Amino acid sequence: MLRAMRVNAYAALDHGQPLVQWNYETQELGPDQVLLRVLACGLCHSDLHMIQNDWKSSTYPLVPGHEVVGEIVEKGGALAHLHVGQRVGVGWQRSACLHCDDCLRGNENLCDESTGLITHGHGGFADHVVADGRFCVPLGDDLPTEFAGPLMCGGITVYSGLRHAGMTSGQRIGIIGVGGLGHLAVQFASKLGNTVTVFTTTDEKAQQATHLGAHEVIIVRRGTLAENPRKHFDLILSTVPTPIPCELYLRLLESDGTLCFVGVHNEHLDIPLFPLLARRRRVMASPIGGRAMMRQMLDIATRLGIRPTIEKFPLAEVNSAIARLRRNSVRYRAVLMP
Ligand SMILES: NC(=O)c1ccc[n+]([C@@H]2O[C@H](COP(=O)([O-])OP(=O)(O)OC[C@H]3O[C@@H](n4cnc5c(N)ncnc54)[C@H](OP(=O)(O)O)[C@@H]3O)[C@@H](O)[C@H]2O)c1
Ligand SMILES: [Zn+2]
Ligand SMILES: [Zn+2]
Image (cartoon, rainbow, N blue to C red; front, side):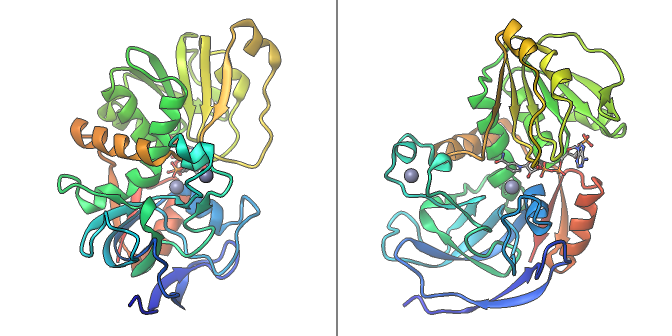
C-alpha cells in the first residue's frame, strides 16, 4: 500500500514571493507516517517569517502551513493508535527522536533531532500533507475543525510558555501583542484565574482585549508606554515578532518575576544586568510545546471554552491572508479552508 500521490499545494518559490500553485509527489509512506487530507490550516506569523527567510534558514519551494487539521487518508503500519478517517491536528513540530532525555521527559520540542513540519518537508497550505503520526493529536468532536488549527501552534506555544514561566493562578500577568498568539495567551491566563494586562500598539484592540478576558489594557506608542503601569507583574509574555524595549518591561516585573519570549526575531536582546539582579528577575524564551502538554492544552481549551477568534479564507486567497497578516489587520488568526 501507501502509494505515492500528487499533492496540490501553494508554495513560495523564493524569499518574500507571493505563493503560487505548485505540485509535488509524495514518497511511499513510512511505518510512522500518515497522509492527511487537509480540512483547515491556520496562518501563523512563523509562516510569514519563513516565507521572508527572516531566520535565514528557509529553503524553497516552501509550502507553509503548520496549524493543520486533517483527516487521515492513509497510515503507516506502526500506528495502531490511529485510524483512517480520524480527524487529527498537527503543529509546528514534524518529528523528534523520541528516545533522548528531553523526549522521554515529554519535551520533544527541545530534542536535538526535532524537525519542523515546514522546515523538513511541505506544510498544510495544500490539499494533503504527509506527517509523522506520532505527532498527530486526535481531536475531540467538541472542537470544531476551523477553531482547532490555531491551537496547534499558537495555542500550545503560549500555553507552554506561560506554564514554563511559572503561571499558576492568582498572578498578575502581562501579555505583549494581541495577535494570533497574544489573543490566545490572554484567554489562557485569564480563564486560569489570573489578572491580565495587555500591552498593545493598536488602539482599536483595547475594547476587544477586555472581551477576551483582559482586565487592563496599556497602549504602547513608538516603543514606549502611553501610561506608567505599576511595577507588579509576576510574568510578562512577549508575543511580538520584532524587538521590544526589554528594560522597560523588566522593570515592571515583581521580584522573582519572569519575562518570557515566545515572539521571535533575529536581534540580540538588550538586557541590562542591574534590574535583573536587584529583584532576582528572570528572562527566558520558549519554543512550541511537547506532546503531553499539547493534550493538556487542548483539554483545558475545550473545557474552559478557549477559542481562537478567526477569519476564514479560501486557500486560493492565501496571498490576501498573508497581506492582511503583514499589515497587522487579521482579527486574530487567519484560517485557510481548502
Ligand atoms: N516560540 C514559538 O515556538 C513560536 C510559535 C509560534 C509563533 N511564534 C512567533 O510569535 C510571534 C507572533 O506570532 P503571531 O502569529 O501571533 O503573529 P501576529 O498574529 O502577527 O501577532 C503579533 C502581534 O504583535 C504585535 N506587534 C507589535 N509590533 C509589531 C510589528 N512591528 N509587526 C507585527 N506585529 C507587531 C501586534 O499586536 P498589537 O497590535 O496588539 O500591538 C501583532 O498583532 C512571531 O514572531 C512568530 O514567529 C513563536
Ligand atoms: Zn506557528
Ligand atoms: Zn529526542
